[in-house]
Image 1: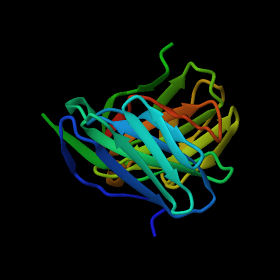
Image 2: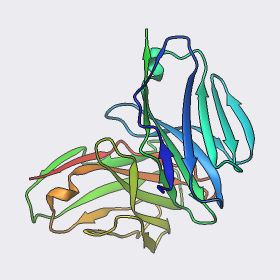
Image 3: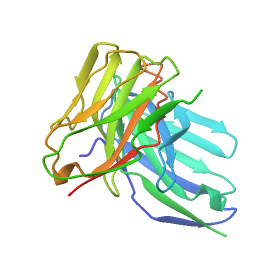
Length: 111
Length: 113
């Protein structure tokens, strides 16, 4: 089983809809979870981090973490065409400093 | 405050050539990282450093070397370039281990022919 798994997509949603991106991880001692957005040809940029079970909201973005199910998700409300990008899930296991990335989910928001 | 800068932006190498990818950060971050990203794939960690003088291997270190003589700089050296090293290389830095909100440079697109 891969350490961090994401549906590669593409995920296509209409403008104004909710986009739901999912990520599962294999290591139960994982402690820190991140969502990065990467536009085509650009570098990743952090959009959300979450460390404890539950929801964390920041503007139109909500990260959800369920450690018992080893599952982290990102919801984007009122999706805009400018949200079209690849979303990378990343996880830190235990006390090491290393991020493990999923392959990313390509999101397309159609006007 | 430029953040993380990388040079060059693009480079074409012939098989067997060597080169150094430069990375500099001006945020006084202790932690620095080198990743490679192949098409349709996530990022793979090549090497990382937790401070000046301290480096360690990541997931895919073969064919690469690093050094960290200062807090600001973390160059990546490719010896004897191979076509398998064709990729986009990203340097990143962070101030904390656990929180580890990494800031990425713009990347270097390398082609080995």
